Image (cartoon, rainbow, N blue to C red; front, side):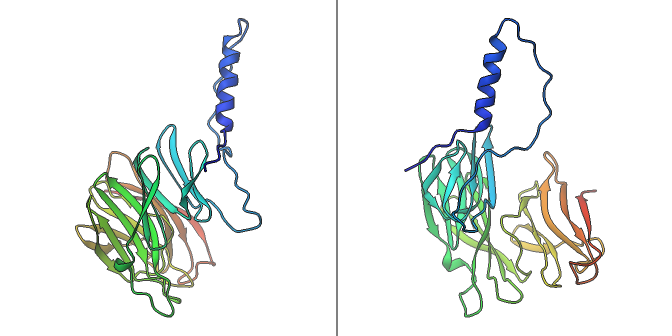
Length: 264
């Protein structure tokens, strides 16, 4: 059963429309865009938080908390989306997400799940393999990221691809833990994946293309900079990145926030 939550923004639009119909109304100056809360969830003391959002239009989108249920734009909780994390989509009837070793697809009315456990790093005593990200490149091309999450060093990383009919493993390597749902298109059919180090480990910024993973050269070297997030500049193959520089192998000392740009 879905529970509906009306957005504050809808109320504001309705009030503005009524005010505009008043004979003596005077148009107010357009207000500057601002951030505001449109959805709250009471977890009754648990540590659930929204970890990813995806928008496929001005009125269509999803928020994922990995705890209760995927939450649609209006905002209603969808029962079949229980536990989903991450999210990427092309339209209101074509959304992908993940949960543990399952990928999930929304067809406009319900979520369906497919296990890709056989393609993840093998389960061992001191690891916890799971999916960590997903990106829908097109209706017939979807990438999923997984990590073996070994207890001390993380990894191995694997990249999975769905070709419209089946999932397969297309690349992998040892690059640490990485982050949840942080990947971006390279504007040319490939991907960029930030893999920030932890506890003094090296950080990586990986480029995937045609079945190959290549670590990019980072300013100052991988032990003195951490890239946490990247985003494609629309209409180009350039990107922006965000992170911090720090003392060698010490992410807590001499920290300076940095914005990076990739391109010629």
